[in-house]
Length: 271
Length: 175
Image (cartoon, rainbow over all chains, first blue to last red; front, side, top):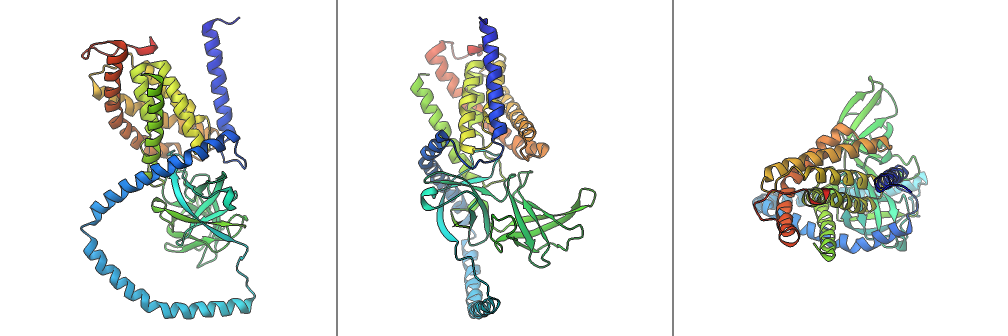
């Protein structure tokens, strides 16, 4: 028989070993959730929805206080913008027609098998270590692991956890994220990685040593890797530097999407 | 506090954590309500309660997060134990000291999580984590823990220990 002190020590050591083993086994998201995990997430969904609504109200209140002063100027600026954009419509329509014509000539078929499911953001990661969102669509709506998530502005991330009615989106900036991408201007290929430095920008590792990349370059998905379709807007280059004794070119990419303001997203199902 | 009181406090902590997280965009550190609660409970009630609160709230956070499940529980439990040990030396009426202890424990918690997470394979930049997460979370805790501690201790004092208001805190369940 063990004495009380020894028993406590043994229980403590076992608990530590168990927790470390569990953490080691879950450094990445898994394909399948345990039953109790699924139930916890399903049960939390309404609470998350309500908490996020409360948070949004608080944010909106603070924002409206700050914005009151600039509303008149912004109104005038937006009117000017509307006029400018309205004048662009005929040119864009013409470009769209030309685009369709050229696509027909090339025999290009858009990925018609993709289905966009609109989803509402019901929560954000409670941990400061991970950048994820919870959305209100899940397996019941056809959402599956690794489905890309986008907005009109560009790529948001991919699905990493699915329950019947909810799903978790791993954002582009999360340390675990990685996206095959190309520079639109020079067609230089690379990988946009999540930020291990907990920033709102992502490092892009270019595959060639003398890669042609400059500030302001637009970055889109390359389609390599099979998770994301090609051509999704990722962001633009804000900075370029040589790392690892000058052997690797690394660009800092500012994502096209403002992750702090996301309320609705589209999940591209069926890729 | 009765068991329903603890249950209510647990639900409130989860609710507050979810709301606080929704106020901050990714890449900006949000206040860690679970950490605040664990430090306050450890300081108020001692080692055993700090450990229990750390394990429960840490596991809750880990399950919601879905990655490194267990690491949050481990580090928060350790923080609860430390808070419990320190409670022997902290005096209720010295809230500045409580604030400093909260700051120190929070930065330590973040640092330990970053080091262990990295050792387990997560892509964490430890120094950057301390600057980007440790310091802001530490400051939030330094602001939030003293009032929670003061309120909680007053209630605890009245209901359970019977210690007069101006007496220093004795060891709680750590003794």
